Image 1 (cartoon, rainbow, N blue to C red):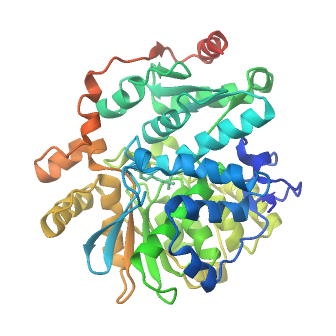
Image 2: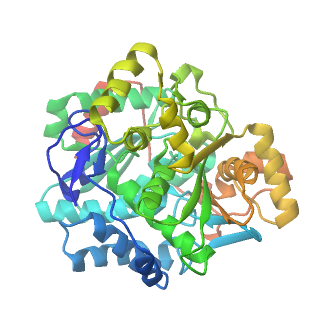
Length: 469
Ligand SMILES: *Cc1c(COP(=O)(O)O)cnc(C)c1O
């Protein structure tokens, strides 16, 4: 399997060439040259596999530059009951006949990003070891990504993590989750500014190519192909749990921000997994809902991005979206470049053709919906009353839209992207109870913290990195 860039760079690359990279050199995103098709007989054979075995089968279709025995060992180390809490790894939580949650949030940081990041940690350590190289991961986080990255990379040979977060602006739980890590290769930097300041510092450091090369700076952001690929696996795993034969179809609803999670669903569907609908659920930051309803993509700036009670979806420029548009325009890289490199910067938006718009639903199965704070609160309440299940705010956005888009006879699976303990304030508002937390995290906030506070200064962050590598 080889990889190409959505913007036309034709250099042939293998999986490990792009594993440690972000964007392609031409600014595009990497995709496989074609999606491997999985027939009904293969699906039937996969039905009985464990999660790690299934992950091995799927990853093997996309990775031809890691020996099979090594890849098998990597997935077996990653997807264990010890890390994810259950032998199924992503069990279904039935709500009523034809409606279930897919539990993706039982990893160490209680959000679905662990599903991919834990694999990335193992792959990075393996590949760096094989090359005899080291990597210093620099990132900015307002919550879930940074903690998932730190828990995936802690103690990994050859890797250090420098994670910037806005000082005093994350929830106490999220701060404690990151700052309580005592591993010497994990460095928390609390920047005396807002999230955008953190992101600007990361960009400035990454744009200093000399510094970047000299100090081997890398990232783990959501455009990384390996992260997306890891997420494809749980669509298959959920399908097998929800059906008895390969003749059955299911739909998925996905609480969306950067379009990474639901893009993995798109890849699974392109591979032949019998998915009827892929339902994109957004919060008040509804750029994606607008696109799927109208065919107009109109990203917003930081100033127009609302702070909501499902904060991990407060994104107004969906970084993985270009991958889907590439397929939608028939993989025409020239047309894709015109949309993203010419029209979008010039006009602040672009529109697709009427035919492409019809294809969104008819050919690719995408529909969408939107949810606001009142909807989240009402959905959390209704879910608790009717099903006795406490859900988090992001999952509530999904469930609200899933119920609107449900079809007779097609099971609807809603991806649970975080546990309610992570976003306790809104749960208390809705239910008047403090959401339960895994016992191992009972004393999280009182553990000793390891963090350095720095001003909004590119130079001081650079100096900190130099002093610690
Ligand atoms: C990251 C995140 C999302 C959004 O996922 P994307 O892949 O960016 O679309 C949704 N919910 C939670 C809890 C998250 O952490």
